[in-house]
Image 1 (spheres, one colour):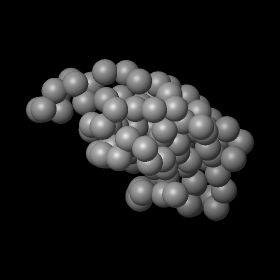
Image 2 (tube, one colour):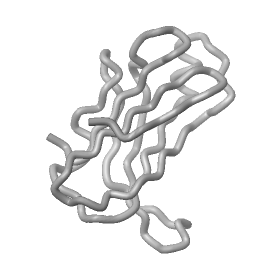
Image 3 (cartoon, one colour):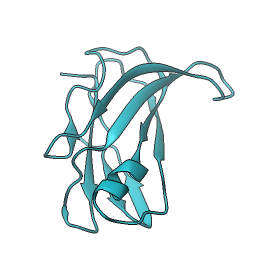
Length: 114
């Protein structure tokens, strides 16, 4: 299993958000102005990306950027956020990190999942 996984739920429609492209990047400098690509994927029919990146990552700051604009366009919704970036710190190199996104056209939230 990937060290980092995610899923996206469309809270406005009450169902998983399938087909949301996402990319995982690692912070490359302290100013958070440079990021290096780690992996990319697209949510499946259950709104999940179970294989986002390698089985092990080093400690550091990472971000997952979700292309919500393309999802809203495909689902016939007009969204306010064309993308959502979730920045988080991976401090325990042995723990699994699950980063869910709850999405609606005019709001989003995230949390550390299990």
